[in-house]
Amino acid sequence: MSDAPVPSPVPLETGRILVVDDDRAVRHSLQINLRKAGWEVAVATDGEQALQALREEPYDIVLTDVMMPNMTGMELLGRMRARWPETRVVVMTGHGSVPDAVAALKAGADDYIIKPVSKDELLVILTKALREKALRAEVVMLRAELDQRYGFEHLVGVSPAIREVYEQIAAVAESDALVLLTGPTGTGKELLAHAIHRRSHRRQAAYVRVNCGALPEGLLESELFGHEKGAFTGAVRQHPGRFEQAEGGTILLDEIGEIPLSTQVKLLRVLESGEIQRLGGTSTRRVDVRVVAATNRDLRAEVKAGRFRQDLFYRLNVFHIAVPSLAERRDDIPLLAQHFVRQFAERYGRPARRLSSETLRQLVAHPWPGNVRELEHALERAVLLSRGEEIDRVQLPPVERDEAPGEVAPGEGMPLPEALLEAERAMIVEALRAEQGVQARAARRLGISRSNLNYRIGRLGIAVKDVVYE
Image 1 (tube, rainbow, N blue to C red):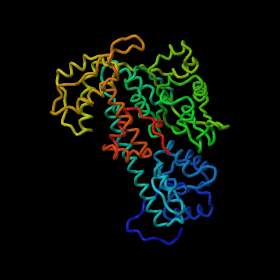
Image 2 (cartoon, rainbow, N blue to C red; image 1 turned 180 degrees about the vertical axis):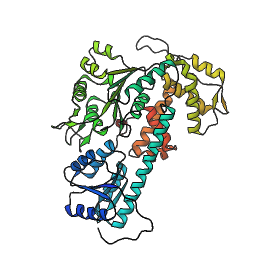
Image 3 (tube, rainbow, N blue to C red; image 1 turned 30 degrees about the vertical axis):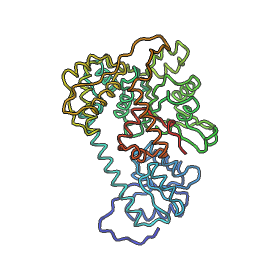
Image 4 (cartoon, rainbow, N blue to C red; image 1 turned 60 degrees about the horizontal axis):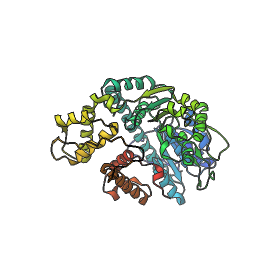
């Protein structure tokens, strides 16, 4: 890195930077030249030392080499994105390692620079990263002001039943207490879990959701706790689990009632000790994570049936929030309906903006066994079929009849709405596989926007295991 001054018509902004490189000469050169440019500089010789420095003091930017012993720059990047998402990361790589730099950008790095480092280029890159950090901080501040002014973002409802839930969330959110959300499928437990995270002191860190019911036993343990290279067939590299990815933030264990007994033992140990052990590993790692669990099962009944450990149930049941069904909050149906109509009309560019009074009466009277999710899907279809400013007809889902187990009425197969959802799910999974999991390309293949694709992935519950690519 040359010491020669570089003329600049605009003074470059400076801040606090942590330089991470195992090469002493590179560290020394960067430290001297960045200090001359006005930066406050600290150095670390490897990823572990960098993480310790970040725990002790905040930094605006981390400038790290990619190839380092013990912990690579990519591994450091992954740990940082989980714990310190607001810190900008710039990676350094050699001329022959441009693919590493591209991979780092995909993994969340803000920029990269090729060695040997040019002082002029580096200062421009660092200034750009610093300005982006300031801009993102301003966005976070504005969002916080909106949350404070308007209350629970994305949560709709004023009925006594849902207001009681809001009060419970407000009471527990700022603590680190474990929260158990129970209620029927489709009541919005995941949305409430996210609200708990957004209102907590961990809001700037990661929010990680794990669908425990969607993963087989072996894969579930690997996803939760991670695995070491060679832990099992196909484990070709080290993999941090979801608990490590949620470091400093919140993890939602969705459908926790589906966890097999063998995994329940290991989960209980993590909840009690705060330590995880990767599959195939011999050492434990301490994690700082707030746990929220959700289930549509009656866990007390599951304990009595021997399918759920009693000690794990008591550990989870620290702060229990029972989420009401839509039938228990019918007063909220008009508000929810209008909310969904506006949302989908904007998303699909449709003119529909309101529901007729007769349609609202029909919606309020319907039993909605699928709860808020079923109402949402019905109104999405109504918006797509609407032609005017007012929606005067909503195709209500059929009310299921009670039938003996395994009994199927003659001529009945999968209902049309379910068949359409299955077909949509298959098309999206196929597109993601064809494009190696890159959502932007998959969206182009499907002829929809990336945001629309992301919405549908969440709505259909498409998990990582559904998209297998090399």
